[in-house]
Amino acid sequence: MGHIDDNLRGNEKIVYRTGLHWSVLGFPAILLFLSGISISTKGMSAVILFAIALIWGILSYIVLQNNELAITNDRLLVWTVFPWKKLKSVAFADIVKTGFYQPTLGKFLNFGSITIVLSGGKNISYKLVNSPHELLMRLGEFTESARGERQEPPQSNP
Image (cartoon, rainbow, N blue to C red):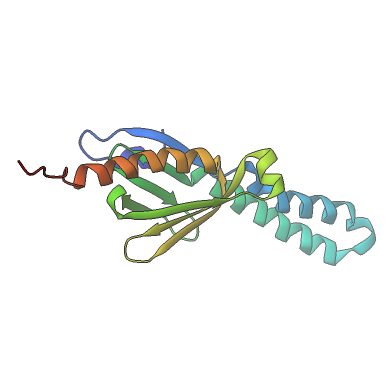
């Protein structure tokens, strides 16, 4: 159970949940490793770089553990913690278009960036999302059904 569960309305249920991919920790880990092995030769500058990499790694881990994206039967919820804790709620009727991008490594490890275009022309983008294709497929199913409910059936003339 995550932070999003505390913000559900009445009989709202989570249909699909994902978060950020563990690759968020990739660059801090590489920097931590490289600065760690160069401490003996580079001295104080490597120690400073090591401290920066360690802080970056800790912050990345906090972000990885606490960011969530969830599709409920009523809306899309996004919980972010960095730099401030924030819950974004997007109604399915407000979503006009969605898209995702997966780099080559993202295709192998199943992560990528998603973009959601809202009816007011505003774009919402998130990077390093775990399983972006599945998230947007599920989201597409719900946005289509939300649009179908709002449209009136065609009237037939007798």
